[in-house]
Length: 431
Image (cartoon, rainbow, N blue to C red; front, side, top):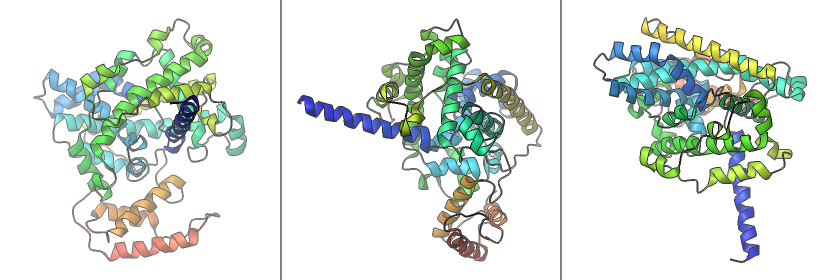
């Protein structure tokens, strides 16, 4: 291959990597906490609360079975974000973030049939507590602190819908600081990437909550799960290396005794394949290319979303306070579940508010997508509870206020779909 051809190939690889990076960093809605932080919440409550709940419901579980169950708890605590990763389904994760969010988690808990499914369900409860608390208390308030122009435009709270790029950057910056401070140890990370997914329980809860099958929204569930695990195991370590190389001085100001070997996560490819299998979609060096691109591209224009800044002291205080509050809220929810009095309102994870029409644009869009998919099937087999939820959400289906493009046409379509829904005999099965 000639030098010109090699140059063209490298250029194409960089373009592809940039496109993929933008997709990872911008296209997917932000989670209040990273996968590492969600795992830390499970660890904080495992010994004194979660493991005891597992034994109370399944008293015959052995220590080895509890160890396996912990991997399912890790899987449950990040399941709501599965669709936002390569080979996932944005629609799946949007549903779990904006539509009947509490009903979905409650279905997992109530219908768990073994210790692994129960651990998985309690992990999902942790995600519910974290996102509902973390976004309004920390991320939405930290964004304007770190980006004054956004504060001038939106005020003291900025939602993901208002500025997707800044949300991703703020969350990643806090992750880096937490790694530097020793909050996420490499050993904990290594155990985390072995997360397991209780597929039968997930499929049941998804069908009962949303009236559609998992297979209808994923190209391949197994591929999505395996690739999610592998993406976490490769991309996050590479990006921590980059953060160390670019911001070492600032990181050391936060944690003066930090060393590179304890800051940077590392798991060799052959070790990963041996432990977790190789049934993922191999990125052919994507993580390393992404890291290289991150180092060399100018942080201007569309590439600004690949930048990284150490969070301000005020922003860091918000996150730390939200962690404490989230763990307390998670503990209270676990106690309520154990006592049989758990109530999980259907909230919008980006704001923590009750999901009502017109409250949040991404929730409205996701409800519209679900209604459209159900209408395309003539509302066959729609569970009674979902039918009631849709009718309550839309009401008369009147146009939303404001200058929303094509709102009249959209509302007319919704009214027709609602009329069809109310005229359709629905299944008596469902939540």
